[in-house]
Length: 225
Length: 225
DNA sequence: ATTGATTTTAAACAATCGTTTAATACAATC
DNA sequence: GATTGTATTAAACGATTGTTTAAAATCAAT
Image 1 (cartoon, rainbow over the protein chains, first blue to last red):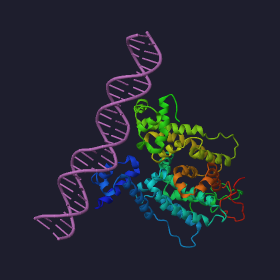
Image 2: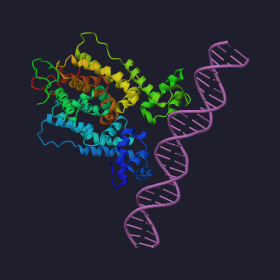
Image 3: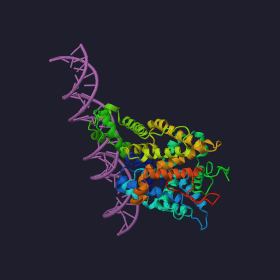
Image 4: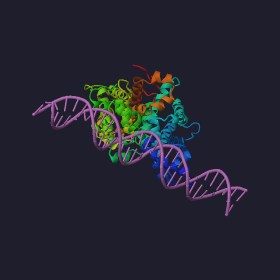
């Protein structure tokens, strides 16, 4: 893998998985260059130094991932519920999707946990639009007088549930049996679950347990429509 | 800070913040020993090598944090809603609480993101009990026939919202104005918000937006009871 | 074919890492 | 007070790091 005639691309492709798994410090340029099949001096020749290679690698990760799994472009009149479901689904696909190498979101999680100074612009450039998109969806259903901080916090609650499975994926796996994980933790399963939680909390779907002020509703968590 | 007569303790106290901020690889034993005021050989003398110091540091972080902010011991008959609120509050205090140094949860987040082989036992030993406690609370309100994976996923949704603010704290700060963050993102504020979301999704509280099947309920998100 | 610029390589560089060693300081025991 | 065992130090070790250097190879254009 990572074959190209341009050695610059080869380095970039090899650097992604290595940085993602080892982190910036633990990853060595020798390891990256060996993986890319170029000389050790290649990194300095094409990128100046290790840090600039890292920055370009992070930028490329989010850029590629964003266009690999783009947010849907909803036609006017699309129900809010559907938008919300698809937003969650898209986010989870970006985090856990098997369509591409898992090193991309993993590398981004490293940056989220401890952002490099040079990568904060990336956070602003790529995260804020998606977050604003989510806030726009929420605005369609939230009461007009809902204060800004409340809308943002609801957004964070949704995003938080999604990124959790990427951040704490290995811990989650330790808390589950292999059978459960393989049976009920696909991207589709998780998207369905998180959607249910969000829709229920917003009042757009049935509550997961009993009703708030009325015990007459007996139709609970229906698995599939 | 980090004063003690026992140089072993001094090293341990100094290692915490350094490992938390720099990570295992980037942190140097020279830096730690300098901070602790002991010789460079101290780490190898007292702990064998750098890795064993790291393991002990991580263990101590969770241990101290666990007894600094223990889970409440609820008397029988405590309402489920109250238990859930206090579980969330306790978890957030552990993550973000200013009562102690913030390096402890930060160090744990590093382990969650990419667990060291030697620290997985810690995950099992300390995380599983808390998670089971949460599942026990949920069982009180969920329908008895709710499958195990569904109960676990609801648990992850709650935990995910909490850890998000520690994991992505710096990104969250970049998405908010300083004013909003200082005004509405205290531990108490976040606990109240996450509790509202969880209670609403479970049907134990009013939905954040309109009602699911009935628009007659006009009482929305009441700030304080 | 020769030139000149660019790309690629092998080798070395200086710095820093974790760890070890051997000498020293200290305290308790006989 | 000599001795024994532990604690602590300064210094050095070997390995590895990112980076540089200077030579070799490659290629395009005259």
